[in-house]
Amino acid sequence: MQTIRALNPLRETTAALRRAAGTGARLALVPTMGALHDGHLTLVRRAREMAEIVAVSIFVNPKQFGPNEDLDAYPRQLERDSELLVAEGVDLLWAPDITAMYPEGFATNISVEGVSAGLCGADRPGHFDGVATVVCKLFNQVAPDIALFGEKDWQQLAVIRRMARDLDLYAPLPNAIVGVPIVREADGLAMSSRNAYLSADQRKAAAALPRTMRSAIERLTIGHPAKDVLGTLSADVLAAGFDNVDYAELRDAASIELLAEPNDNARLFVAARIGGTRLIDNMAVG
Ligand code: PAF
Image 1 (cartoon, protein in one colour):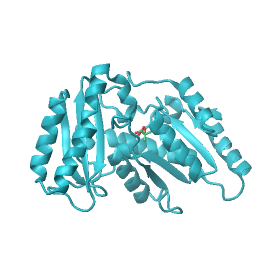
Image 2 (image 1 turned 180 degrees about the vertical axis):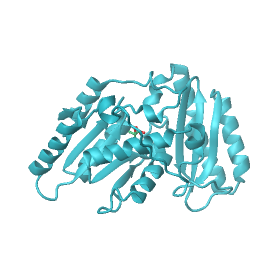
Image 3 (image 1 turned 60 degrees about the vertical axis):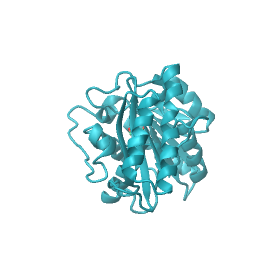
Image 4 (image 1 turned 90 degrees about the vertical axis):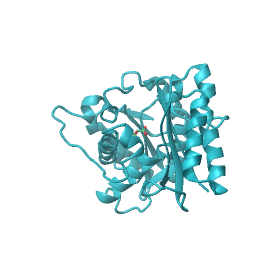
């Protein structure tokens, strides 16, 4: 695996990898912020199935963290992450430093309206602008044929798909932005780099999140009114030891529009805080 930290060698390296892989070879990019877990490695394995060349980026993007969020505390473990990626047979690790990504005087912002409103967009102002801006840059830097993202960040995936469509980032390849289903721990908790912040007790309590979501979906499926079901879900999450429910909402999976009752394309979205840690999850309804 080649590890590259500056833009000029990156371009030479992707060109060389493409030449070596031959005509028609596809390059897949898995963008990450590091602190890799099995969820990320699942994306890498899927990328390997879909493309001849696999690149992973690791960049903790300051633009997607709010002033009171966990940018400084966010786990950084490049050496360990590199070892995991080597073991997965990754060809290229793109790990730019801050000045390679945001040189002095950087002044551009990409803002995607509509799908970025509500849910995490409401709780974390500017977050999706930061995500869209860095992902657009990553696409321009690495020039992949496809890019893979986890469905745990469903709204992020919707924002990236809309941006790619609106800016013609992937005009030649339909379905170039690939969503990969959530990878869960044995007790159902969605894998996340932020799970590392949880104490043993909080980690145990956190399993209530997917559990209450599944039981809410069962009640919705047999026709209970959504308002009652979502109220019970929030109460159950708090009773399990969470400190706050930021949102528990039904939304259309594609447009992210709020739904009063489930439709055929409905998804349940929850964000809740336990200690200082904010966990998110989403599941299809029906
Ligand atoms: O999902 C993430 O890890 C990040 O939001 C991403 C897509 C790598 C952009 O920084």
